[in-house]
Length: 209
Image (cartoon, rainbow, N blue to C red; front, side, top):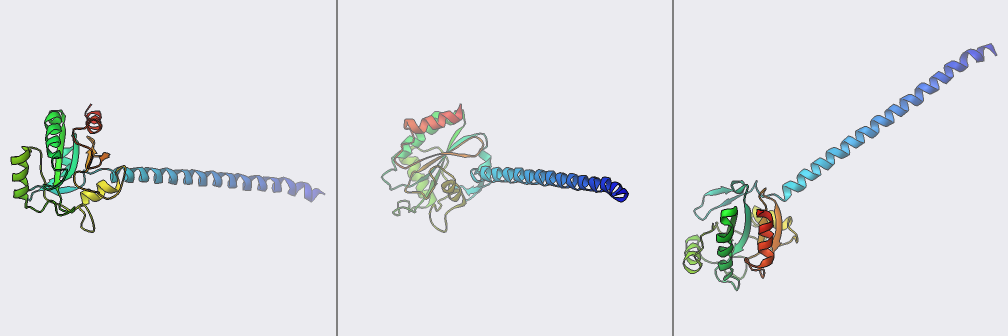
């Protein structure tokens, strides 16, 4: 009995220490998991933001010079694939109209000729520029002809079509993407939406204000 009286306090102390250790270990595990989750959330958010941003992409001017889209930081952009022999070609008028209307407020139109739809943009860069300037008095930037479909799709249009709402391939010439002052893809308008329509200009004005 005397031995039991001596051993019992030691046994109780041992059990208390084990339970305390388990509790501390469980707390550490919970804190570690919580930290891991927070890191994953931060990484996921960073990835999402990056996927909707175009500032890391480079394009080419009609003169063949490389242009960083980050050069347009602080401006609202409309990016549009254009063609000279399309049923929507007359939208050049609307594009020039809104460019003149908003350019002093920090707005730019970036036009990218494309021959992916019905061979409606077969000309050279010089021919395209001459056509735009002589017929529609275009003064906004025209860029090197590119691909918006297939395995040769440009990095810009891969980014735009995968991260816009709605997402998916370009359906025809004169689709329009609106980019905010931080380079993020904000809106997408189909070919039938005229550049100077109320729905488009409202989207532009909301970002300029």
